[in-house]
Structure formats: C-alpha cells, structure tokens
Amino acid sequence: MNPVRLFLFVQVLFTIFLSGGLFFKSRSLKSTSIAGFTLFYALELLYFLYSTGAVANIYPQLYGRFYFSIGLLYGPLLWMHFRAVLEKKFKVGWRMVWHLIPVLMLNVFVFPIITLSDDDRLLYFSSEANFFSTIIYFNIARTAHQLIYTIALIRLYFRSRHQLSIHQKAYLGGIATIYLLAVVLISFLIAFANSWRDFSWYYTLSNSIVFLIAYVLYQNPDFFNRWKQKYEQSNLDIGDRQRIREKIEKAFQQEQLYLDNQFSIQKLAAAIKEQPPHLSQTFTTLLQSNFNDYTNQYRIDYAKQLLTDSAYAHYKIEAIASAAGFNNKVTFYKAFSKFTETTPSKFRKSVKNNFC
Image (tube, rainbow, N blue to C red; front, side):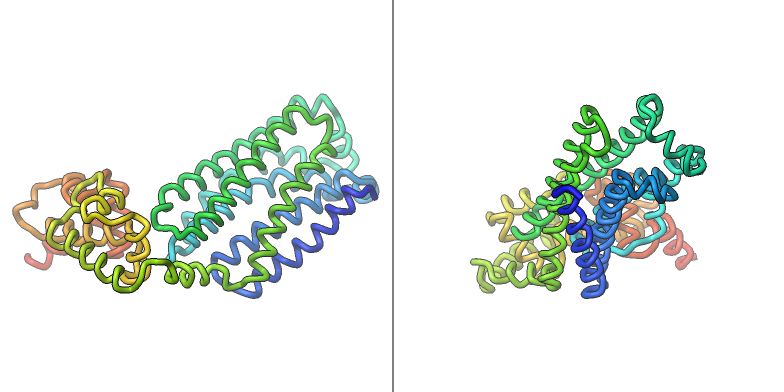
C-alpha cells in the first residue's frame, strides 16, 4: 500500500471512531447530524480505497453500487446540522423526506447498472466509453447537488449571522467555506482527472478537514454549550444589557417598529442608537430569543389582533400579513404556525365560530 492510501486508511479508522464518539457522547441533533456526516464520509473514503484497489477485483460485490448515493447525503446532513445549531427548537419532521428525493431518483437511474452481474459491472465501470456517455453525468449531478446545498448553507449562515456569536460564525462559516472548496475541487477533478485514483488528493485534503472538525467536537462535547458561556462573558456588562433590553422593549411595545416589512437588526440598532452585536447579545442572554423570533412573535400577536377585529374581516390573509410586517404569505404562515400551532385561516375561522 502506497503512503497516500495508507494515510487515507488510517484516517478512515480514526474518523469512524470519532463519529461513534460524537454520537454516543451527545444525542442532540447537533451532534448526531455531524456524526452522521462524518460516518458517511468515512464510509465513502473506505469505499474509494476498496474500489481503486485490488480488493475490488477479488470481491466485486459492492463495486460501483454506492458511490453516487453517499454523495447525495452530505448536503441534507449538513443542512440539518446548520438548522439544529441555529434554531434551538428545530426538529426533524416529515419535510426532511424531500431532501432524500434526489437519492431515490438517482438510484432509479443507476438501477440498471448497479444490478448488473459482478463481472459485467466491473467491465462497465472500466469502460472509457461508458464513462463519457453515462458515468460522467452522474458525477456532474452529484456535484450540482453539492453546489445547491453549499448555496443553501451559505444562505442560512448569512440570514442568521447577526444573531450568531463570533464562535458560531467561525464554526458555521468555516464549514460552509470548506464545503464550497471541496465542491470546487471535485468539480475540477471531474473535468480533468484521468481516473478515479486521481481523486485520492481530494479525499486526503477534504477528509483531513472533516477529521479535524470531528476531533474538535469529540474532544469538546460541550462545544456548543460553551458558545453561550463565552457569549455572556463579553465586554457588555449586565447593566448595559438591561439598559438595551428596556430600549428594545420600548421600540417594540410603544413604537411598533416591527410593522416595517424591511425591519432588520441594523434598523433597530440605528433607531435605538446601539450596536447590532450588543443587541444580539441582549436578545440571547436576557430576552432568551433571537432577533427574528422576537420580531415574529410581536408580528404574530399583532396579526391575531387584526384577525379577531371585525373591522378587518374583509381583509385577505395576504393583507393581514403585510399589515403585520411580513414580506410574503409563506413566511407569515410559517411564523404563525410556529407560534400558534395553527394557520391564520383556521385561527380566523375559530374566532368567528366562537362568536356565532
């Protein structure tokens, strides 16, 4: 075994060990999602070593059957991890099934290939003609899938960056950047690599990074909990936070700034003459919320007032949403369901029935 393959094999063993440690040390969704990502990455790396070595010729039963499917699981697992880190109450629901549709579709397309006999499958994947006529398009689809999730992760990050501590920004921003670089690298290799063995450098680099992330979390199982502690130990003392809290509550309760559908933490900071990071700290430590949830709670309470007011009985749901400060109906419905566990239409109907 050459040094690069030996190094990769050692990484596989350590990464599998670390993924198990992450899973058993903490059963929170934050840890289990990144543990799952780490485990699948280790399995793909092991699969790469198997497929590019002599073992595949002796035991070809698994050859060519799982590479594409594993690659379509990374995005959903990282997306789940980001959501779990950003949203304390985030839970995996039935909607997560939508993230698995690409995996199912891919397996439908490759089914005629992966069900070939062992000998025929070995011949199929070793054929240069088959590579350029079929396999390369599966590689492109996998890379496009990873790119889409990279964009989704970056959007999640920037949408919530004002509510993040510096440690969260470094952690999530680092993962998003690493994933983007991995996608760029694998895209380059798909375009210019002469064989699958050339991907050993991709796996060497990217798995080193995955190994490092997993090792940090394994050695510090309370890593996520420490964010809050460090956040609270900032240079903003409790007196300043109490003062800022009063200004925030006045802006929401008396001035109703949240009714502006372009309202943001920067606008709030400008209105009460405070710095956005100080507002984020105050929301987290004293108001036990983040800017988005705090704002939406007020907007939903206001919307409920309008939905129960006979003067607004002729207003459509979209108009109520706009009046409460929401940009669109979809966002309004999501927030309304989150804080009331029902929809605006059902809420309005239940109010009417109570007065009938």
